Length: 280
Image (cartoon, rainbow, N blue to C red; front, side, top):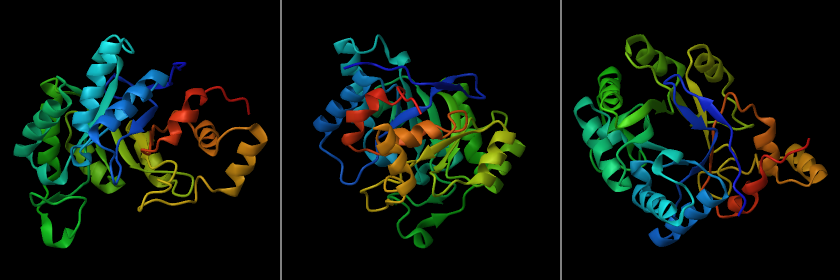
C-alpha cells in the first residue's frame, strides 16, 4: 500500500501532532485480533496518529498493533506514531490521574503517550461507563486539582502533551487561569452541522488546538447522524470531482484549526490512502 504524509500542527507544548487520526471507539467492537489487523493496515497506508481511551477497551489491541508494525518494518520505532489516550471520569481526581495513566501505559505497553486528555469535565463513581445514570453517579469534581495531576504526568515524561475533551469555554478558562502547563488540545464534537464557532474562537485566542471527534457525524453508529456524509452539497461536489464525501469534507475544512478523528469504520481505509491527492 502507498504511504502518504499527513500534515501536522505544532502544539503549544512544542510537539508535532498529525492532523488526521484514526479513532478507535466502536460499539460493538470487533474482536481483538481483528482490531490489531485493522490498526496495522492503517499504519501501512499512512496513519500515524491513533486516538484511544481507557473507556474504549482498545488500548491493549492498539499497543499490540504498534509492536507488530515495528516488527513488520512498517515503522522504525514507536516515536514515529502519535498516540492519544484519555482519563475516564471515574479517575478525574488528583490522586487518581497518575495511576490511571500508568494503567493506560501498561495496556499499551508503551513508556509514554503523546497526548493525554481529561475525557469529560465531570467525575463519576467507580464502575460508571459512558456517563450512564449520570445524576445518580456524579461526584464533586475539582477541575484544577485534576489538572494538576495531569501536569504531573507531563512533568514525569509519561505524557508529552496534555489537554481536555468536551470542555466548554467556561470550564477551559478555569484551567487556563490556574495552569502551569496550559492545555494543548480541546477535543470536541465538531462537523459542518455543529461548527462551535464561539469555542473555536476562544481556543484560537488562547493557543489551544481544537481536535474534532465525529467530524463525519459517526454515520452508522447509534449516536451518529447522517447529516454530514449525506449532505446534498458535499455529495454534489464529491460526484463532480470523483471523490468521496469524506475526502471533500477533509479538504475544505481548515487544517490549521482541526484534527480529524475518524470514526471506526472499515471503509475509510479503502479511500483514505489518497485523501491528499485533491484537485478542487
